[in-house]
Length: 108
Image 1 (cartoon, rainbow, N blue to C red):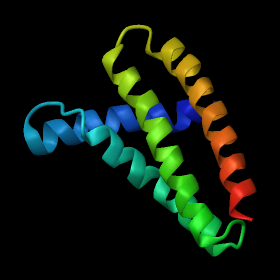
Image 2 (cartoon, one colour; image 1 turned 180 degrees about the vertical axis):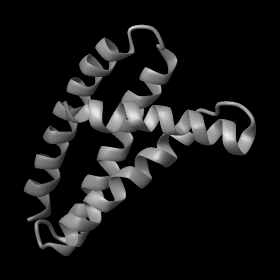
Image 3 (spheres, rainbow, N blue to C red; image 1 turned 45 degrees about the horizontal axis):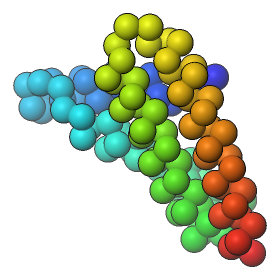
Image 4 (cartoon, rainbow, N blue to C red; image 1 turned 90 degrees about the horizontal axis):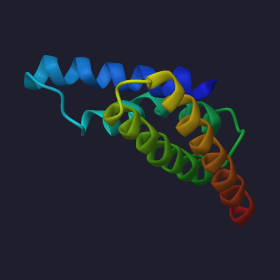
């Protein structure tokens, strides 16, 4: 469900920004939009004391990379977007969760 909230809007916003500033879609807008979209979550986790600043930064980096890959795959496969997002998003969130737990475990 979270992938529907983060990945689909990132793909759509990257298309809009690509057309707005470049006249066509560009793949590199996807990671830029994903990083900008996840930045408030990372900052909130660090400022609220939910995670140490370095841990929050590492978690943000891993989340941007993994969800950015899901968004790039979703950008490539246009038809059946909802099913692709649900499958790839679930896989990416499981990966993010696993990596975040590993980062938290080794950061302590």
